[in-house]
Image (tube, rainbow, N blue to C red; front, side, top):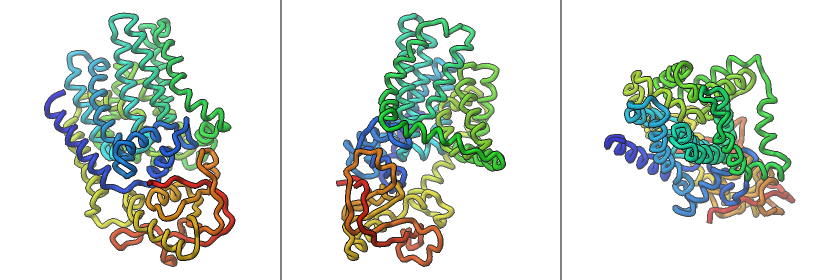
Length: 457
């Protein structure tokens, strides 16, 4: 990579690290932090990789937002270098240096990675291991020796398995690779390498499969139930949300180039076409009857960056506009210079005022004679457990039964839940610069049993 690209990546990584340290945890991040205190082979919502990354980060940097997110910016930096290397084998020979730089710039300029790398969600390790999968696959397809090709196919299976251990949507990339192997003109399906990758893949996926097998297949069933909801009358709404979410997360000009690059793969790149359009079709079909969360297509963003980088179509304009938009969102997230309300600013809504609110809530509970905070909502319970150490937080959501958390019998506790109706009627509110973000209701309860969430210290 050129010196300017190295410099840009170092600067971007430094900014992400600063943002990771400054911004309070979102409720979902606090929930994954709870996971990290009890590492298991899987969890109800996702596989285990995000919990493992948080555990490593907090071991290095402590039980704080920076520790929780530490591996996010670092993995984005390393993943960018790996994606650059993947382009050297997957894109037209002789232009790989320029195309590799374009792919790295395009991916880093998206809001998905630009701001997402400063947070810790399952998408963070997912994007890293998808980039590794693309690199290993490129080496398997271009290796000059049969034995070496088989080794790289095995590594491809391992990296894809680790991506699956981060998020289930990685399976779509695996199916896309399978479709490519079966349809490639080189008849790859007759070679031993692709088949040899399968047992390696299954071995790396086995912790997640074993956890599900020993927990009534809870996670697989939960994800499978998403396909059971079917509301075709709202198809246009869901498709509009899917399109709007991708325009926002990719940033508008990069989204257009992504679409154009994907279209070009239909004629030139059999592999990239499989890796893009098979997952895209799955998301499209799902959106015909149910909502597709905006971050689900993140799994194909590294592939889209490779496809778009080969177009040389307004790349500079797209990258500059993407970084400008991402910088604006980052500044708003860190300093809130524009006085938006919590309804208008989703980052403010999720992150503002937790420390002060949790402390005041614990003081109120103690004054009323409560020995614990009792919370049904898992995200709120996780945030309160991370934000205060005065009282134990007891969760009575059934999902906690899937954890190895200690049971806790509460004689007198203060139950807390979000007030969803008239927020002005409550004096128990989370504030940001004196403005109400969210309000909550509380009531004393007795004889409650639940799971005690971990404390930070």
